[in-house]
Each structure stands twice: as structure tokens, then as C-alpha cells.
Image (cartoon, rainbow, N blue to C red; front, side, top):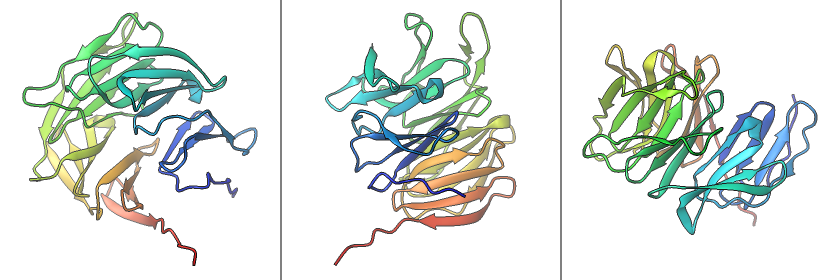
Length: 271
């Protein structure tokens, strides 16, 4: 077992792209990156604004993010060279970003409820997914490991759409499934879509659920004490990790919908 050097601040997000581990902290003005195969020495990228809206592609070589002063644009940075190589304009504020690496697609969830779809190999052929009626803002998006389904989460509604291979670029069909949450006063904060049209979603109240779309069945998992801030499933989709704003993390066995492990971060104040 190896130990990796920290960032000097609590890490709030980890991303694994091929053999590159990227760490992000709300308290640090930069991204940390490590190559897990060749060496464990961390290198830092140029400061990236803390807007909570970022994504990585091409094995971690390209970063996509919004600027605090202009959330209607997505900046594309070559992370290897540290230079901005392009900027994508949108019609409204960008709330979240998601990358389909194998299908070479960039999804942008807007505050208007629309999702823009940019092919990474052709910035001209832009498609869009319109919002359902009465839904205004995209809260979160997720793509499963096989990149066959996309989940779009609104306040109390989730759409699950198929990503269909096609030439010159994949086609996003109309929603295969749509379901609403039943938690009054609580909104969807994070979602993860699994194989066979299953959706794991967390709420601002800390509640966590697994929904089986074909069976129209909901399985409650033991909730957190505060808003769900991150959800991630394993490659085999047997396990899932949930995190909340109070720094609590829980590891779940998705087959039996039960918790297997719990971790928490506590800050020790120096006297």
C-alpha cells in the first residue's frame, strides 16, 4: 500500500482518468494530478476557478470549466501544456458538465433546463436536449460506465436517455424512462446511473435511493445527515460511494442495498 502526498487542504473531489488521479479542494486554487503508473509525485496545474463545474477528457489531458465572472462560457484547457485552447459559448448559465469519453461527447446542463451536447471532435455539430415542462434548472447529470445511458436530474424529476452509437456521432434519443421523487421539501443534488436503467440519487436532505426504472421500484438506503455532495459507482457497479457536505462518506453494496463501511473527516484545531 502506498501513501500519496496531500494538497495541504481537505480534498473535496477525486477523479480518475486512465492512470491519472486528479484531486480538487474547495480551499486550494489549483488541481493536483498524479500518474499512478510511472510515479506518485504530484504535479499541480495552473489555477482553475472554484465554480463547482468542471470535467476532464482524453485521459485527463483536457479540462473543461466555467469562470466565476462568466458562467455562460466553458473554457477548454490543455492540462499538459497549461494553456487555454478553446472557449464554448452557451445560451444560459452552465450548472454542470459531464464527459462521455468513449463517445467523445461533452454534455452541458444549463440553468434554463436545456442540456447542450457538444461532439469533442466537431464543435460545430451541437445538439440539445429540451427540458420537460415545468422543469427549469438541471441539478446534476450522470453517464454510466458503459456510456449507454445518460441521467439528467432536475429538482424532483429524473430523465434516463439512451446514447445510441451512430456515424458521425452518437444519437441521444427521447427519454427511455422518467420518474419523480416523493420527498417533500427536498431536491435532487446528485445522481449516478447504472446498467439496466438503475439510478442512484441523493437529496439535499441527505436521503439516498436506488431506483429500478424497468421495475418502477425504489430502494431506500440509509441516509446521510446533510446534503449529498457526490456519488460514484465502481466499474463492476457492485459498489457505490456516497459523500455529504458534513464530510461523511459511505460505501454501499448495491446488490443488497446495505452499507459496508463509513468514513469521516474531522478537522483538528491547533491550540
